[in-house]
Length: 278
Image (tube, rainbow, N blue to C red):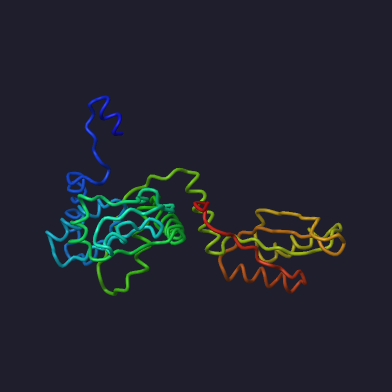
């Protein structure tokens, strides 16, 4: 962008470290207070700090009693660390699925306003964003990008009662592949998709038996993996990994108990990490 601005004579506008940009974003506070004059808390995502600067500064001007809480990804908490040290710091690396707030260094022009007007900062893990995404899709029919979901996930960290809280959902910029990955991980976290490993003799009819048992328990098989080489004696042990859909934790436990009762000695297979992990 800098190169294009120099070559073509374009005007470069920084995505966050610009007071004019922050001022424009601050009009969000005007809209919030106009519609909800008695708001107690405003939760705002923080990356470089532009949105948070505008929202917090104008909110405090209109009503100094409003608490403005910034919300950052735990894997890119440059603003939180900067506030703790009293100066702008640069993170050596970042790791978060909230790409819109994946910033190593906050805006230096904005930092004094953040110091003055942000009351606290909450950090959110990627696993919490996955749960928040599934909640918004299933319960509210809304597609919100991970950075916007920070303020939804932060609600579970708010130890307050009988207060009016506004979460700013700052965007819906998410591609279909990312959405698919997040939904899948969300279903796994909620025990609505799980994998179980069982050992069974390698002879005709065994797969039909276990399929019938799972059907009786209303488990929906979505994947089968058959490993014939787990033991030298195939008649004694062949591993079958079954991935199923369930209604939740209780239903999953019911299916596992049924397998145990039938003598299959099931073992749950754990899923590790999220799609952002290297």
